[in-house]
Image (tube, rainbow over all chains, first blue to last red; front, side):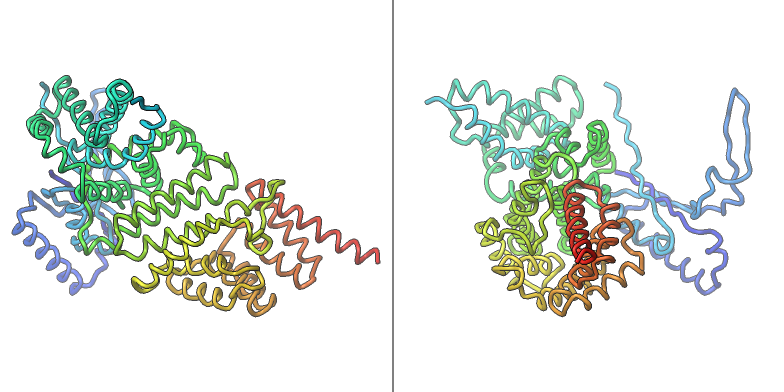
Length: 119
Length: 421
């Protein structure tokens, strides 16, 4: 079963970090990614540019509207994700707890929906 | 040989949890297992009076439930990949027998407990699921006990089951490294159910007493399933010792009775004996956790012949110990009461007033009530009356309100005597 691990961190706090802290964090992410690649849980994962670069699109009455910024203003922002394969929620939450971002931010664990084939 | 319906119902009550736990493992879904078991019970009600009670009613019910599941899967053509496995298991009676006897079944019940109390579910959902699935209580009953509309409780249960399914919350006994933490969550749910029943302030008294009974029953189950752990025994002991006093907590007029004024001859001696044995066993098994400390305090109360006979210094030091493990203003308030009994009312009042100044328990009526009580004993009646009135204004349930009103009247009578004489 697949789970999406959505990493929410405070961008402002992240931007204010010292270079030493940042390289330690990068190192932490590299090690985590390698470990779940090795264990066979990794499916994909990316870091995102900050929400200041986000554009939100919606279509109403056939008209495409774009707004500058993220869908919702929140204290922490979605900064990256992993898509992982896990046996069950316990395995997924244990992986989530090992993501460096979980230490100061939050990782939301969402099961990927399985569509059953129509009979 | 004829079978009374009450006999069959007793079998259902006793076997329900075990069978459901095993069925859930087989079919993988709580809803499907519950429906199948209900259908099997119906079948038993029809067949057993005619054909006699089967030699092994549990195995009969498991087999019948499983057949109902297979019928359903065939009919609805859902989860078709499960069918071969289920059919094979149903055909092999050996599997049925092996799965309804012995350790495997006990493991299933533990699995069920840990799934219902999984930390990925919020506490309200954990409580609701535990009572519904493990306790076999109806949604309506649970809703009444927790004073929420039946529809709300129904939704809570449906949502929790849907999350278990969609997020794949495992049906598994936690690994050794996770067990202490996960067990804490289970114990917290049981204690919450117990306290909800024991607080018995508002709502229908009978239903709420049922919650105590249910929490104790589940506590017994946990002790039986995890005999080597200290904390389940400590919690069960604590619940039994507390519940032993239930009959004396409210008088004939529906007024709360303080521990010191309770008729100790009416405390349930059998429950106290069992509770004391459990507490002693828990304390022998390992370092005292928070339930063991609370149980030790309850044991000291239970062992004292009168309130004055109570080992208050020991109780005060146990509250200090508890406070270090689990800092909480309510524990501090309890310590204040014990200190007042051990070292005098002034010493207790000092702690109570520090709590009031810190404003850490806003709206908690027992805080001004405790202050009022100490002031009354110190014969500072005018201040006592004002504090009782504060407590009365905050009290949310009728038994405590009546108790506080009675105290106000008593203090007023003293004040009038003083001014008159």
